[in-house]
Amino acid sequence: MRSFVAVLLALTAVVTAVPATVVLPGSYLPLERTIPLNRRMEPEALRARDRARHARILQGATVAGVVDFSVQGTSDPYFVGLYFTKVKMGSPPKEFNVQIDTGSDILWVNCNRCSNCPQSSGLGIQLNFFDAASSSTAALVSCSDPICTYAVQTATSECSSQVNQCSYTFQYGDGSGTTGYYVSDAIYLDTIVGQSVLSNSSSTIVFGCSTYQSGDLTKTEKAVDGIFGFGPGALSVISQLSSKGMTPKVFSHCLKGDGNGGGILVLGEILEPGIVYTPLVPSQPHYNLNLQSIAVNGQLLSIDPAAFGTSNNRGTIVDSGTTLAYLIQEAYDPFVNAITTTVSQFARPIISKGNQCYLVPTSIGDIFPSVSLNFIGGASMVLKPEQYLMHYGFLDGAAMWCMGFQKVQEGFTILGDLVLKDKIFVYDLANERIGWTNYDCSLSVNVSVAATKSKDQYINAGTLSVSSSLIGHVYKLLPVSIVVLLVHMIVSMVSPIS
Image 1 (tube, rainbow, N blue to C red):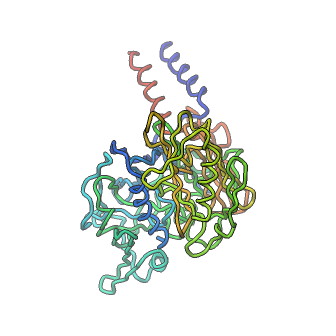
Image 2 (cartoon, helix red, strand yellow; image 1 turned 180 degrees about the vertical axis):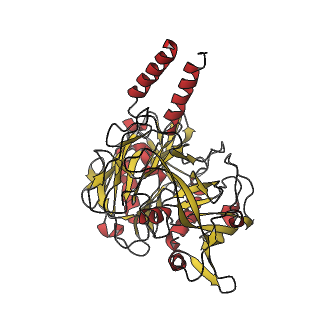
């Protein structure tokens, strides 16, 4: 007995030593980066993949509870990868791996009768297919349902009078796409609500059931079960759940960029003193921000502010579904010139396969300057060298680092995973703003839920302790890697005890 008590005390000491408390079992849904395929991708291949995704962007595709997703995987942009999470839907519940996408609105999964859909995945996951006939809670969305009107705004929609069924088609710029129909069914969530610790809740949501795919979506090497749209539109899951009072109208993520990656995604507001906010551009279908200027090593670049103006096909958007970062030409050229001028005495600039690269004899942190993206309201996003450069092997005994920002002649400036990693990002839809701060995403975060839609008024729920008792006022959430480590420690410490 004394040995067992000693184990518990040791475990308590371990938990106290880390800046977070143990997460309740079942409170995480796994959000993962795809498993690398052990081969590097050329910048052009990454740009081609992002072009397809940008076509999707251009075409548009009561106190709430906290829903927490754990993040795994790597953010290395040279490996084939995408972020995905597991969601449970239908009755009985069935699990699906779906890509996390802040650049689109609608959640859709593959139907059991999907034509030309991949049957296996090179990502090390088992593909599943949704069968509406096998779910006792599934219902088709009729032509008269207002939801069908929402769908028309974000995709090519059709309504067959013969079957009274609302259908959709998403067509992407490279010719790939998906066709299907809308279904209403249950989604299952592990939610922390009010003063209760954990609530296994469910809600009826509308999502797409894909019956046909083409182009890039048919490829086996990076196949998943569908796409989980986290955009601001009325059909996104965050909008559907928050309108029912099940979750706050705010979500946050923190993507770890080094080592084995990982991080946190949560339906709720991450609280951190260093977070700065900038307002969203109103009446836009995506997360558009007002970028005003760029500074390199503290010096503002000579860029006409009109280059960052928002219009139908211009502006600056935040998109976790984009691998690289994209900068309008009027800003890209002075940006790269400033970087090159700053490092020319310490690194050798070269052009590799059309991309601006540098041969670096030492750490890039010792040579390359910090970059500041300055937004309206005085909010600056500070980028470290590894958040605008990509490591691409070695040449002539030196490390080769290439620009992660890509030039676009026209269109959006897009802040993709390269920029978003190693930062907390808060998408506050209720107050129409986005906030961020640099952060070590392997650490825990405090999460709050909004009590009202009034700005800066929040109710903090309870801190979860080892015994799951309420001892504080803010949730603390651990990355899944730390939880797994603690579980292994418990097993190894307790197993010798008879």
